[in-house]
Structures are given as structure tokens and as C-alpha cells.
Image (tube, rainbow, N blue to C red):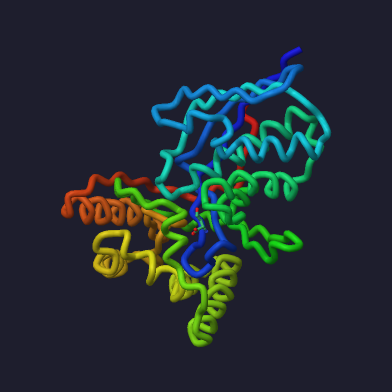
Length: 309
Ligand code: HSE
């Protein structure tokens, strides 16, 4: 007997400025769709019906470690055939690998009768994320992709998080310049030690950011979405980054930062018309430097990964 399920997984913006590896949010308007068929037997088969290349070997696909971890925990052997139907552009910085890993665990958990909790699903999905980030197990994309909204990771060991709904009135403008920034490389440039005065600023900003989202206070979110630890090292990968931030803030953006490890960047504001204007500023900025960029306006996705049929 073959059982089948199809899931949608939203894109996500990790870090949210100061929350490196501990905060992220799910956004609507982009996401993955994949279907999974489960039958008797063994092995994983991946069929790619998207426009993008995926690793040719199943062992190199981010879905595989997550699936193997879940099957081992369930103590079952099954043959799984996965068909990728819609994919966030790989390398865009809005959670493409996380969406694959999250989609695989949500689909498999559904086929296994929902035997694992949301928290366990996030932990299985982190196994896949580790493959794409050079071994680092972080949940700031996979957690919001699965749970929806904004997720703050309070602790990795033991694993604990809190979920904060993304305020309906907030809107994101996201631009993806077509340059390559590998997550593993953008992690390798980060400092191993941090001066105390930077750490103080950073944890003050994380507190302000969380309070801002919880109180739906965009002004506080904007003042707090400042990253003095990671952004200074990563902005070198994004041409004209400081100039772009100044232009966006002058045009009315409340916050601006790098989405995850880049190259996508995002700004927050409180209305869609403004978000469209910010998108134009971002795409023109990159185009004027000879870099093609596309953009999207997105509200938060507060539902997270879901079965669609
Ligand atoms: N927190 C991770 C990073 C997200 O910034 O490296 C990468 O997707």
C-alpha cells in the first residue's frame, strides 16, 4: 500500500539582525511544495520537478539526514519517494535548504501518524540544516518554517524555543541579488571572540527586538534590529550595503538587515505600498551595480509548514 502527502513550507528570514542563530521568522509569498509517497521497502528516491538543480546524490540532499533521523527514532523501515514541485531558489538566503528539510520531516511525520511533536520535528530538521551550513546545527530557519511566525531559540541544549506571532500590520520587503554567498563561507568570516561592549549591545538589542515584536512596536523593532557582531563581517559580501541601508531608512524603512547568511536582504515597514517602494529601491540599487535582483513583498506566515493535500 502506498500512502502519499503533499506539504507547503514557507520561506524564512533567519537572524533578524541581532539574533544570529537564535531568531527567525516565516514569510508568506514564497515557499516549497513537495510530495512524499511511503511504501514498503527501504531507501529514499528524490524526483526534482523544479527549475533548480539539486544535489545529484541522495546522500548530499539536506532532506536525507532529517528523514533518516526520524525513521531511526520511529524504528521503522520504509521506502520514500519525494517529488519536489516548487522550490525556493537555492542559495537565496530565505531558507531554501531549511524548507526542504522542514518539508521532509512534516511530510514524513504525517505519513507516520503524527507520532512526533513539533519540537521533535524541528530537531530532526536541524540534522538537514547542519549539512548545508558546514556542520552547525541551527534552528533559526527550520523552526519558523515548521512553526510559523517568529521563533526565538532560548536554548539549544536542552532544545527550547518560544514562538511569537508576526504582527499582521508588519510587512517585509525582500530583495535577492544574484550573487553567490555560501553559508559555510559567510560563517567562516565571523569572529570567534567578541568584545564585552559588543556583547552588551547585542543582548540589549535582542531583548528590545523580542519586546518590540511582542508589543507590536515597530519603532522598537527598528531600533533593536541592529547587529554589531555578525553584520560588520558579512556586509562585505553585499555590494554597497551601507549605502543601501541609508537609502532605505531615508525612504521610511524601519529596519534593514541581511536575511540569514545572505545574499538576500530585507527591510521592515508597516504598509504594503511602502514595502513595494522599498523593493524598487533595493532592486535598482543592485541593478545599478550590474547585479540582477528580484524582490518580493511579504507578510509573516503565522501558520508554518502544512499539509495541502
Ligand atoms: N543563522 C544562520 C547564519 C542562518 O546566519 O549562518 C543561515 O541560513
